[in-house]
Image (tube, rainbow, N blue to C red; front, side, top):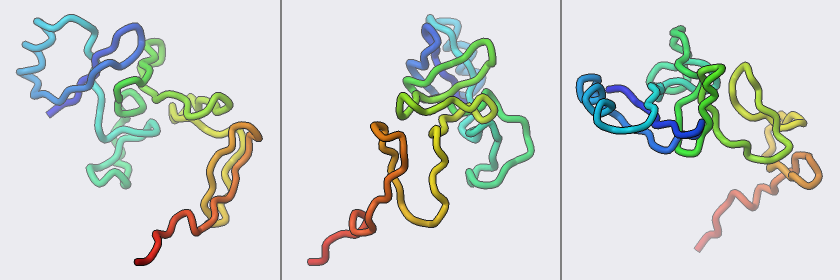
Length: 131
């Protein structure tokens, strides 16, 4: 099975899964630009089906395409929308990075766009109340 993204004006509008024989017939009768995408590619790395082990194979178009993602025809890559206006597109991984690295002290953080900084989330926000 292969995955294909329909791209209109540089934006992914649909993603389908299809056998190659079906897909060839489908694109002959369905208008739009269809581009293959790989479910196993993210961050410009191709992974084994477990999604954690790099396969060593070349990545296909940097990231798996999702509806609303951008297709950059010049670089032949897919990437998602920016989570915040201040974040910067990393053109090596084709993912978004905060302008300030998140602390790596094992605590939980969320991004505060107004202060352009990481704010610690108290542990109580991650626990559920006991009945």
